[in-house]
Image (cartoon, rainbow, N blue to C red; front, side, top):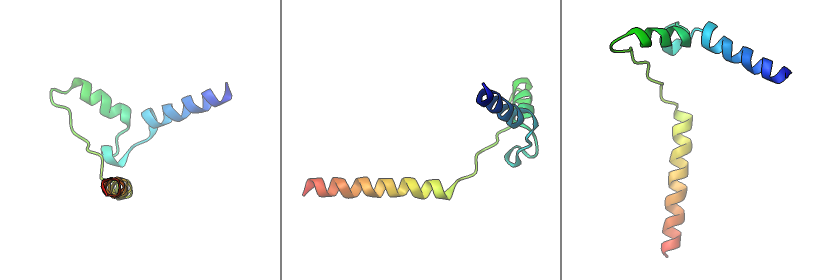
Length: 72
């Protein structure tokens, strides 16, 4: 019960009170409300995360290595 309350409060803070840099200082709720009323909603692309990109590059290299070994 206490955990559920904490999760709810965290969610509420994130959606309604936390201004985000990628939304140019707006909250997620403000962006959502604007999108619902706009003919063409503003786009807020997610910035690339090099750490995650390097992770997946490593996975692809590992898969290619294992496939090459399996063919020998």
